[in-house]
Length: 251
Image (cartoon, rainbow, N blue to C red; front, side, top):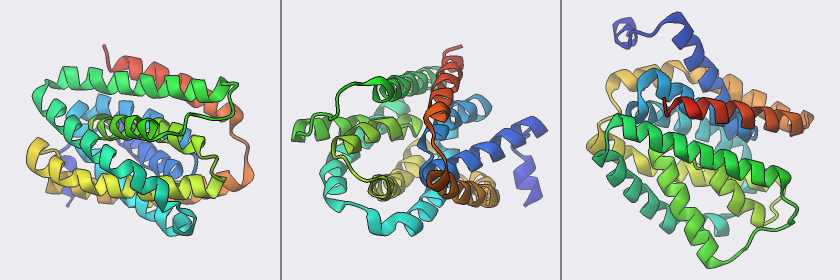
């Protein structure tokens, strides 16, 4: 086991960043959504663009289990089913694009998607409108973009948020609906990572499983934060940090 973990050749700083990312994933899945946006660029810088998506996917699924377990009763399945066909099409498109480009272009795509997510977050933060358009074409566009973004960069959270905010869901329903949606989509991505991109291996799975305590810590911390704290300043801090980190993917 130790030999497999050592095969990644991570420095102590990289191990620390990986553990921190696992904590952030757990927090994001249980409601502190903004913190997740620093995870994707950090892991891409450590492991490379395409490989980092395969490493991150099982961590996301493990965190999805915590989120679904806690919020499963709050999910609104009508909204999930409305998005799924379009999202699966986006996953297939993202698989084809990701397989056709170099890792440098892949990281640039990830950076662009993350910056788009930051722009969406800024719009949500400062918009004056109370509603987002609620129409089947809007759901189709958000589903397609979300599927592509989650396959290429595991970065569909802000896109899904735009759609769910249009429905004016209560906080727990918002989190529960997103938790079930992402668990289904993340599981659907596994075969593409295994058989098309070849980004999941026994060694990477073992590394992911070693992050389980950090994921659990983050999940419980996220539940506590959602109950206790306002996140207005926190969201703005995450937007700035995410934007700066995403720019590094273009360098």
